[in-house]
Length: 169
Image 1 (cartoon, one colour):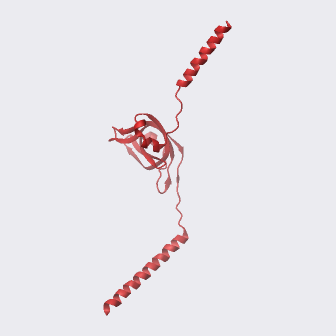
Image 2 (cartoon, rainbow, N blue to C red):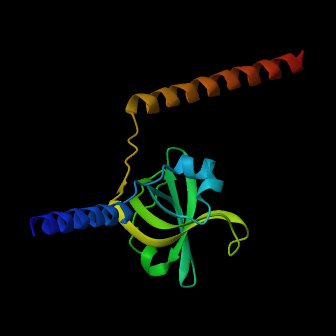
Image 3 (tube, one colour):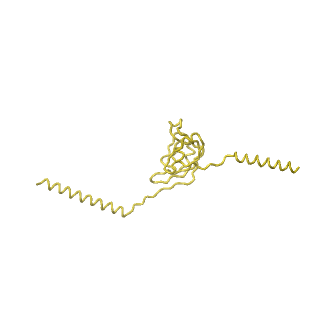
């Protein structure tokens, strides 16, 4: 009976290992430059990516576009109005955009969207909230600009006066 138990234990262990090996493993997000640069390898596959929400949120009926930026590469993601509503800050000169996690299907040349490269969103989450960016004015730069303006006006005035005097003679 001990050999039957050992055999059963070994079979259970082998089946368990095979099942564990076959379970899907949570994938790391694909770096966006890799996704954009090697699009043929990812076409039609499910991908995960993270990046900064930038530009404008472009809602078209019940769906819309959001651009995601990471390491200098940008891709458009197409999702429902409800999914995209989670994004509050979009990156531009005055804001750092929300950092988003996107899981969806990558299309190298999406037939629904005129052959554009995009990701159709299955899940979108905001990982980190963006924020407004302050652009303080340095007083010394303002003073330097004022001095340059006064110098330019003075030089222009002298040149104008010289031109008038030259015409009289």
